[in-house]
Amino acid sequence: MRMRHVPVLLAGLSLSLSAMAASTDSWKIPVSVKKLDNGLTVIVSPDHSSPTVGVSVVYHVGMRLEPKNRTGFAHLFEHLMFQGTPNAPKGVFDKAITGGGGRNNGSTRPDFTNYIETAPVSALDSILWLEADRMKTLDFSESSLKNQQDVVKEEIRVNVKNQPYGGFMWIDISQQAFQKWENNHDGYGSFKDLEGASLDDVRNFHRDYYGPNNAVLSIAGDVTPEQGFALAKKYFAAIPKRATPPMTDFKEPLNTAEKRVEQFDTLAQVPAIAAAWKMPDRGSKDQAPMAVLGELLAGGDASILYQGLVKGRELSLNIDSLYGLTSPWEFDGPTLFTVFALYKPNTSADAMLAAIDEEIAKVIKDGVDAATLKRVKTRMLADWYDTNEAFINRADTLAKLQTLWGDANVVNKIPGWIEGVTSADVQRAAATYLTRANRTVIDRKLAPKPAPAPVIAPATAPAPTATKN
Image (cartoon, rainbow, N blue to C red; front, side, top):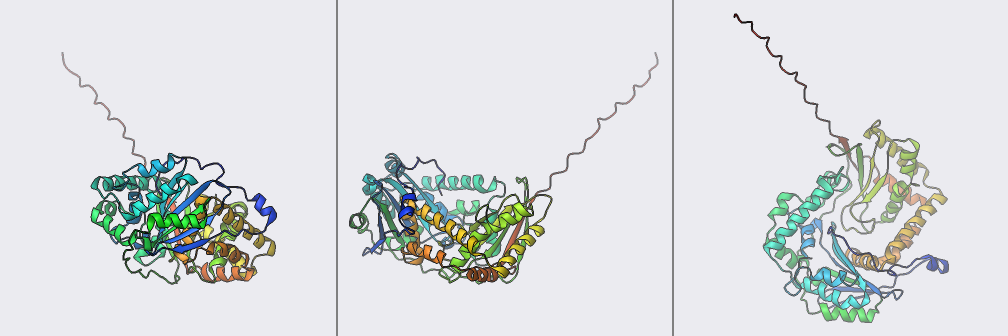
């Protein structure tokens, strides 16, 4: 993710769902899909409620596929995509979009890299021209590479090295939980690896992974499918498809023995813990139950762990959770469900884990009552619809689902999957995945304070020596 300030989203881009909810209990997002001859998949989701559009281009490459000894390269490359081309020098991309009131950004995840924009519909031609232009080629230069190496290193300093707890709940926990390099290396990157990236690395990565046949273009908003497909063909059809390296096998089974790690943090004021379990595979019958279980356990102040550890036992200051670096629906390889919390200095990681295990055991034994299950599902559905209301998010969701599932219409299936989860499904997911054997734990303790320097008393001056007159 690029660190920069962006203008406020245009008024009217995102409309309230209240009126929609009054007339219907469900919302089906319109999805039209077409593949160009060069392999580019194009999605159009028309919505004329606002004269704006959201655009997403997702490439099926992320941290898992970056070269060995080049950790952080996929993220570095994301930054380089904004450094200009021979046709649109550095700065043109941002000016063309933000100058008209829009905004743009990009992010890198284990299984994909996405580039997103939103703007008035009048800017759609310009956005697509710019996206097609940087898909063709970049302005490969030593100065741009050096500049972005420094930018990414500074981002790591700000977000990880100089932050209490850093990335222990997503960087460090993955390094401990997974066995294969593709899954357990630091996707932010080491300074040594980032500095070692060369222009040949950049050229090869663009050649191998940034062709149209490894990408999905999604447009949502004030445009018809016919208009969207015609514009996609106009700007992208002439880009030739390129050979893509064969996909690496990065599957891993569930873990069979708990792993506990202690770390020390010089910046933290209170200790913290991260507990992570390997998730079911994407497309598994347990994926939706695991998503509901995660919300049940750690989804806000009403969740089981918040009520049990923060309110009840008063062991923890907070409870939060992660599904890898994405969501429970947007991954294509091994990922983790992670619970992390700051805990009180008068308790311990053992007490925290015992309390978590106790709450999970209750779910396995008793399941979840109908009212609680309905509340959890309602919150998940509201979040899903609310997220995809904004055109920029909708375009991005569709592009990511097409990339990972091969089916953008999964956007309309997920609500049904959530609704279909039963108490027995939740019990099964908890008993299968939230086991001690499948758990990895990092206990982030406070670093010992350095001992105060000893106070050295000033030397006593010798008594004056008597002299004879």
